[in-house]
Amino acid sequence: MLTIAFPAQAFDTNCYVLAPAAGEECLIVDPGVGVEETLREVLAEHRLRPAAVLLTHGHVDHVYSVTPVCGADTAAYIHPADRYRLHDLLARSNPGLVAMLEQQFGTAATWTEPTNVVEIVDGTRLTLAGMDVDVHHAPGHTEGSVMFGLDRVPDGIRDQVDVDRTMVTGDVLFAGSIGRTDLPGGDAAAMQRSLREKVLPLPDTTLVLPGHYQATTMAHERATNPYLKDLSA
Image (cartoon, rainbow, N blue to C red; front, side, top):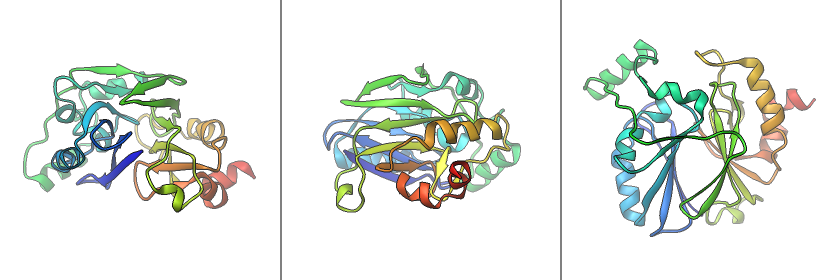
C-alpha cells in the first residue's frame, strides 16, 4: 500500500494519503490546517485521484481543510456523533485557538461545511479506492472518534517491523500516550472502555498510524504505553 504522511501547518496533525499504488485512486485521512498545497503536490507526484476523505473525528486540527480538499465531488466520511462539529466548526472551536490560526496565517478563519458528508458507524466495512476499510468507533477523545483498519501495510514496512495490518488511530492512541479527554465532548470513562475493548484486542502485528507524532506498533505500545499497561495489569 502506498502510504504518504505529512504534518499539517498547525498542531503537527498527521495527514495520510493511502492508495493501492501510484496512479490509482486514494484515500485522504484527516486534512488539517494548511495541507492543501502539500496535498496537491503529493497527488500530482504519485498521479493519485481522491476517492474519499476519512475523518477520525471532528476537531478543527483534523478537519480544517476538508471542504477545499473534498471539493464538490469527493465525500467526507465521519461518525454521526461528531457530525454536528462540521455544521459550524469555528463556532464550536476555542476562540483563542481560532485567533492563533488567524495570527499564524494572517487571514480571517472561515468555514464552509462539506457538500457531501457520509456518516459511518462501528463495524462498517467501506470499500473505497480498491481497499477495504473497517470502521471502529472508539469514543473518549470525542463522542464520534473512530479508528480505520486496513488489512494492508505500507510498502516496504515489513522489512523494518513485523506487521501485517494497519490501524489509523486518530487521537485515540499515540506512541506512548492517548488522546486527551478534557475537551468538550471528551469522556475519560469512555476512553477507558475504548482502550480496553477496541485497542487492547488489536494484534501485536498491527501498525499504528496516529493523529499526531510518529508511527508505532501494537507490540511496542502494549509493552511500553503506560495507559495500556495500566489497563492490562
